[in-house]
Amino acid sequence: MKKKGICIIDDHEIIRTGIKKLINSSESYEVVYEFHSNASLLNQPLTKNIDLIIQDLDMDDGTDISQLELIHYKCPNIPILIYTMHPESLYGLSCLEYQVAGYLTKDKPVSELHKAIQAILSGKRYFSDELSEILSHQYLQKNSKKNQLSQREQEVYVLIGEGISIGQIAKKLYLNIKTISTYRRRILDKLELSSTNEIIHHYLTKKITH
Image 1 (cartoon, rainbow, N blue to C red):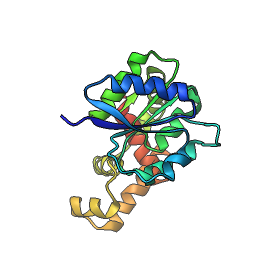
Image 2 (spheres, rainbow, N blue to C red):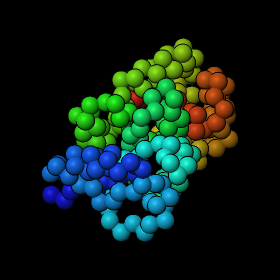
Image 3 (tube, helix red, strand yellow):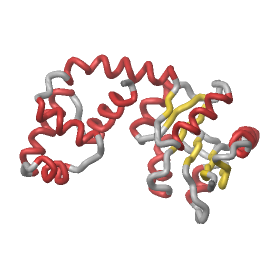
Image 4 (cartoon, helix red, strand yellow):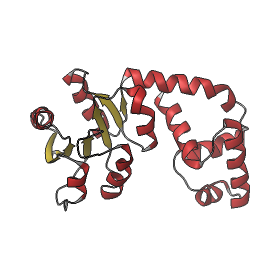
């Protein structure tokens, strides 16, 4: 069986070495790239298959969370696991807006990193108990508002949350685009959201916490 390819981005060599040792001890995956910064990955032609990126935040070269968008552009459809010293309360929710597949702090046991890698490579998301609690609290604050959605609004809410475009939803429900746009506006108003991306984030938060 072909091993899954993993890319590590971390500005500390000792961290990269430790992660690589853990990964390469597995029969299921191996490190195919390691970089000390996002810039080094962005400037490198990638010829090997990558199935997961393990990414630090706030590195010495000035890397910040906004560069996750560039990583997604360079490596589309490749899940990203954030592995950082920064607590979930600081960057966890912000990272979710960039659709990361997992968030784990470096103070957790090595066994949890192994679990996170396995979960994400199997198509799941992996978040610590701390971040899940934050998400649960956020969801509960809005849960009563969500119940105000009509059956049709709920249906449109789910489809938008799954990343389906307004045009595709209209075709799927046999309605015109203007009608779907009206439902979208009602959903935004009832959930006190301001954009399609926020609907998607709200929906994914609900999925993660249930």
